[in-house]
Image (cartoon, rainbow over all chains, first blue to last red; front, side, top):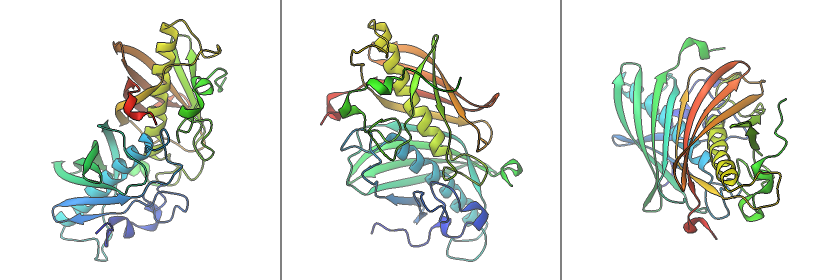
Length: 158
Length: 158
């Protein structure tokens, strides 16, 4: 299976759904969708030919973007579950922003392969989660990432 | 002044100029351009309205992309200068890839403002440079980043 059935981004409120990475209402964006896979989280993505570093290999900024939105989505999934909810329900999930992002590029990421980001979530504070992410291209882990996701502060709200 | 006159990306060889972030031959890409400002490096960018996190604020993945390409471009500038060359010359510069990327989001980055990435370069190995980057929106540093840029290995070459 390489599709997320119930993604947290499907139930973000409309005013939080314009993100270039994962907003369902951003027409030109990547539309990353993140869901549970038992106790871990997953996001799949097929890079398009333009998203290249050098021909044949995926652009690092796209991989950083994938890890970023996968991280905030995973944190939202985790706090939502802690609060007794799943993304297939109709309760509005908590919103997170990225405090920091780390990306280690282990090997060149081949184009024309579905990428799978797999997240492991660690609660480090009632309002902060650390999400460790491995990005797979086929059986290989090509990139590792870490996001500190922070419950969205009021300064971000319009 | 908010324009780089002599950018290292202008003189990358054609086969290294398809990067989605900074390749002059990638039609849909960001076209980041990085040049010297005395001993530091600069890249300017005007985010477009689609590159948003929540309305009014710039997408974190775009900021990570800016820091990434600014980092590899800065490393190329630094080694090129060490070898006795400047980007306005006609010598092909060395090519770098990103080993790792760290981004700290200090405050929300407002849309509709020219971003200025300012890099400070540290040589940590004959083939590796660490680039510390501050991203300014007006007078505020909104994001800080660090890139380890590595001289391009043969595995990346087609």
